Length: 350
Image 1 (tube, rainbow, N blue to C red):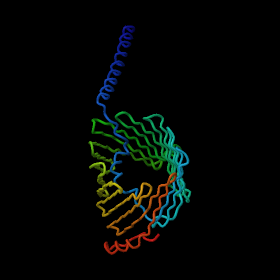
Image 2: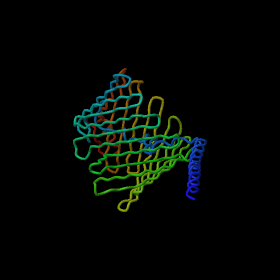
Image 3: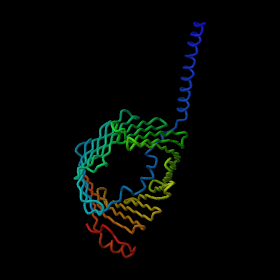
Image 4: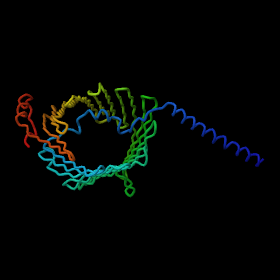
């Protein structure tokens, strides 16, 4: 009887293995027939909308950037800022190296703050990323380790921030997004953070992304009580619009903010505008005088805070270097706007 049992077991095991292998192969073949696109990364879900906003393009005071290309793979940058109402004068030195599989970038300023970033592509789908921020301010230094894998129709990302095996602290983030149809992608993200050895938090977020020919709609829900929805519309090759709605539904606080931005490309100029429900209006106008010379005007008005600043920069591109000069000395126009708006104009003295 024992021998008979062993024979039955030996026959059933290959059958189970064959069935599981056939099932996995069938699923893989079915996914290949669907020819689903890659949905992109989880953190880049709102990238197109953010590109129409002016968050990273506004400034005050004066600024000059000089970039020198030393070789096809190496370049250095010298940056000077002064006259800002929000930050003291500062010098920043940066260097960047771009290889076939690697990317290195680092900056250091007069305060001794060091920022570094490194990307290494093991292959076309697998990329390792490292970011570091070292400063003399206690609690502001940061180390981030990231592994990104791009499949044919899915993306997986694992990220850890300030991991400390000795103190048993850190932030760990795992995200997965999958295309389910040609236009629809669904994803989930889990965040586990342990700021101290005695406390820990874990929450999830769900996302849905629908991509059309000229538009992208995204909705993200976080377990902590935050809803973020965005919509991007490309009218034509020269006009783009983006809107974003952020809703906070917490036990102690409930708030919402809606932002609308637009980008208009003309033959020799570009106009960007942004307005939100907090009363903030931002405008950036770029006029290309020649292929090597650009003239920019930026404006930012916060009606709720009665704060306004305007800036006038120049962008000069030379044969082997780039110099960007920001000059914030617009007293005459500032006085006119002061009369029109009845608000005080800040940062008008260079």
